[in-house]
Image 1 (cartoon, rainbow, N blue to C red):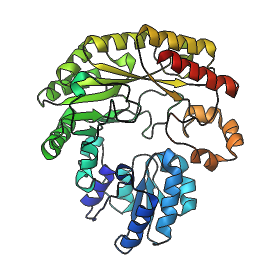
Image 2 (spheres, rainbow, N blue to C red; image 1 turned 60 degrees about the horizontal axis):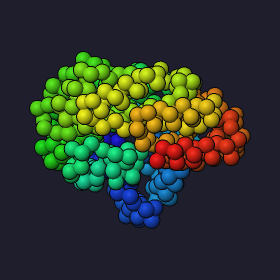
Image 3 (cartoon, rainbow, N blue to C red; image 1 turned 30 degrees about the horizontal axis):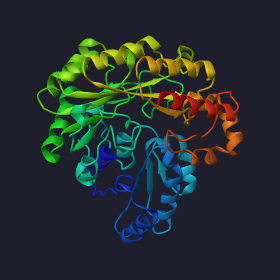
Image 4 (cartoon, rainbow, N blue to C red; image 1 turned 180 degrees about the horizontal axis):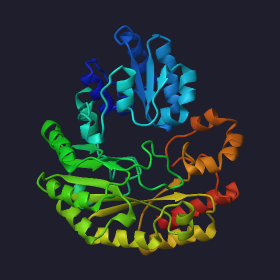
Length: 393
């Protein structure tokens, strides 16, 4: 939403942003806001991932109760549940990347040719204090990263998020990427400019890079670290275990990196192959050992219950975690719309939930159980997960 807001401003529109998630607004407060401002806006825009579908449906219906002006929906939910949003009362859904599509919708002939041309995110329209005063990763965050942090991160006071890339060159079966497999990374100059603005304007002391895979391009990473070293900021990111080596990790640490999140997914090569992860257990072991060697905290997450999971594969994962003294986060295998996992199991999913809308209505946090696709009976499925987590506590 930050980029699209900036694009609309460049077109000459006045834009307000109501960040419902960040502000933790209840529905009653949002409804009152819509009533009090219904004569102010000519257009409404809504964005969110597919797990917010139920809320977006309510929001569209609430807007429709006070206004007949166009409602434009974007983001992951629009890309995988666009028809349902239109049925709820939306005027337009924009699938995939929204910047050029929004230009087209408003009649502009200008188009961005690459992501380096985008304007900076519209931080002025976002309640930045809500973000900078709350930690992104580590203890007390309440999210998947709350297992631990590096000692240097304990005194972080103000942080911000930055995205350096779009797309993913991999194609894991459990994943749906809004931006597809065409990986594009902003140039280092653009990224550093954004970080400097955040530091100068909001006094941040930690940057969280929320790319799925930040270390795809080794030359880019090393160049970025050279520039980041000059800014005296701590930072963290996510990376794949097959994309780190000693040169990258040493350079990352020297430039302020203290936290890397790895989606290990499983300690069983059988399960990694089924997930089309294109990594090996050896990759994961080496990445964790090297990350620790260079004094960076390796946060690890795993997926439980992917089709084919059984007692033997779980035992392999437990052994892997014990060998490396890991305290990982475990997520249920969830067939998100658009993923190969969903497509391969669509009939079973729709039969269980009685339709697509009923299914996506149930999607929430990644740790929440949605459906058992492992092939194990439910009783065994839950007991095995419980025993695994007890053994690793």
